[in-house]
Length: 375
Image 1 (cartoon, rainbow, N blue to C red):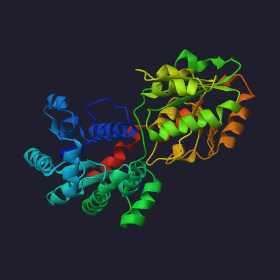
Image 2 (cartoon, rainbow, N blue to C red):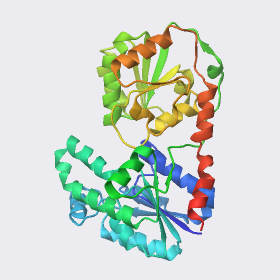
Image 3 (spheres, one colour):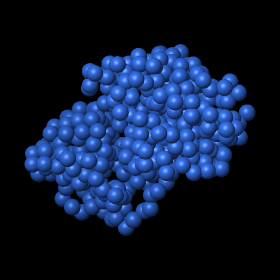
Image 4 (cartoon, rainbow, N blue to C red):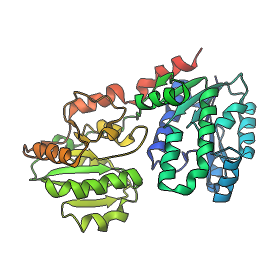
């Protein structure tokens, strides 16, 4: 069986967003389940320099993402790329003799409509696109021009998909509500296991203050969550808060000048030591969609977690020791201060680590994928 994997996410560059990380997870899962030689990657990119990454099993297609090009495509109903790229991808799939296409995001409805009936279509729904479009419009009113294209493409994508996958039950319920189409399977955020226990994990923190860590890149939900947490929670807790993630150094002066117990690291090449050194992870995400990749990463490292419902969305953590749901500033303050009065702190919880291995370790879903795709 030959599978064409199609995405317009920038999977050939840095894995600096949760969406890109999830796409790469899906691609690696396909390779593990069906063999790398049977997966034909169709990567649609706005970076011309990535064209050089074309290889035997990877074909790179350039799509101009200048504003005028996006507007022209949108007026013709298309979101991710124009009809020229669409034609080239369709021809490539035919040339490779693919039996299945695996499509990331429900934004390629017009493309899916044109696929031959003999090719099985597998659609991975990362989030509900019409909800995402509404969020874009609330942030940038000029994006209203995108709304109809999002709606039409998502409806077409769901109509033509033979198999639909979603990340969580919340998205599953919305798919039924909006499109009367339940997903065939829910595959949550997972990751391959890169955890290597260090001596730091075995040590007990004898410092006077609890060490809190946030990990994530600087984009609106993370920025609003971190600044809210720094302003509304940190002045009232006996703890120190470290922020690590791409571009957060842009907020260093804003956060450190206002709070003497907040430290902003920002962009780093390797997150592992920061995870090892932290006592607990905090994830004060107040808005968003899908699932949060960094929650799975925290589970992988066996870290106690203080998080909102949004940060824990899709994760089966009810009844799990050392995972605390906090949806208000007062809830965070009370939970952190209660935890902080009982030093020394152990930064590694084996039961949380085992939860990751049982539910959020990528190889667990190899057989699930095989059963879905193999007749």
